View 1 (cartoon, rainbow, N blue to C red):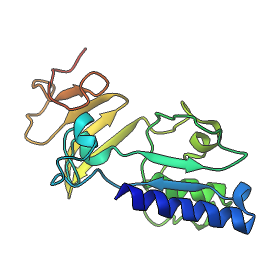
View 2: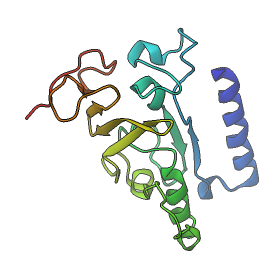
View 3: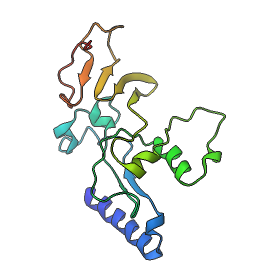
Length: 177
């Protein structure tokens, strides 16, 4: 539950302060997916549709929190797109360890150092492909989403959503040209 998570994060922050390494420590709290769909009272259900395992925004869009005194400005809100697998390459960059990033395979993560250091508007990601298991279910590009599941090829069906105007994905539309 949220109270327990808040307490645990508070304990981590307190320990980092106690150790005297607060200004050298980036603390990030981020979920990897939305809440269980079986919990209808989840706050996300009021804004987004769907839950864990869904290609809808309620299954993939999560809040994230970052703290790094002296580096990240307090109380700012960043609306940029960042994914949990971006943390691998970002932490490698921040830790001067990019030489340890494997080169024998594809790494999905994009270095998002600029988002942490410079804030909103500095993400290097403006698209995301959403998979449900091995199936490519949707693609998000900035505020637009194209759902591929059950759709016909091309741009002939109401499978596009403007997530700024329709965050619950209730009113599919044709591609706007």
